[in-house]
View (cartoon, rainbow, N blue to C red):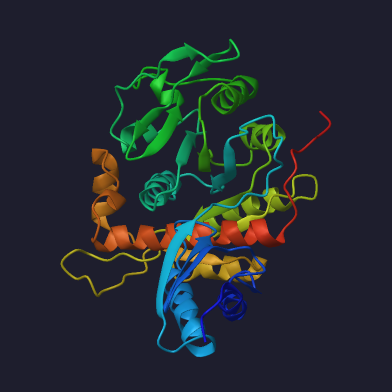
Length: 367
């Protein structure tokens, strides 16, 4: 008997999206079904180009067609993506940005900026449209990490007559930082309202265009900057970076709890344990737990959030950051593979959050 579109859709209705717990047909992830004799082709619209389950979903689709439709069918699966969002369609601020992700630590010196830079580039390398705000106004580090210390964004007049800042673009990531606007050797000594005003400008007066993910590298602590962010835009979720050290964990826990306060209520997407162990280049199989062992994992378990990854303390990651070529820009290296996996896990958690959690609202707080 001839294969029909209904046969194909019925078979694919038994293929479940592992993270979302529903079948591909119910989730409207199947498009462009074509049948030519025994050749069956269709597109699967993944929730992110960084989906770590691509191969699993592909194989499940092929197996379903062979099992339920025709064991001799020539199945062609086109895997593409459409990044999901939980934002309202009529959002006034950052209307073209699907997901806004705050990356915080509570404590300085845990490698949060290094993680953020590599994550942004890793997401961009999957095909996602990515922007990065260096929200650490007092200690901007992204110009150095991206090797664009001498770059100066220009200002132009937008279609509505407003002046807009054109972000710097490097490694496929749109980037803005106070470091582009102030001499690199001068200290930025600003009171809270001035720093908050700069962050608002980076959000509302930069030409971000269409983005799948906008990452914000937050400053240490729980400060005006954090409150300004959640009062200006609906944040999709927060990622917490920590080391296994008790001092870092204590501050990371404060940062995590800040996002979970009832009046803020931003979902915590997961925890990254940085400097989880030291691995010398000449002994790649050895692990030395300089800052303690398993602290990030314990923090994730305590607060029932995913541990998205453990990153070792590796000399090359530091060297790459200092030279303006983050580790992810050297594909195939152990460090790059770690950040690729971390980006996949972050994108995965964003997709799950968008499917199951209510929309994040802009926070309104009485002064």
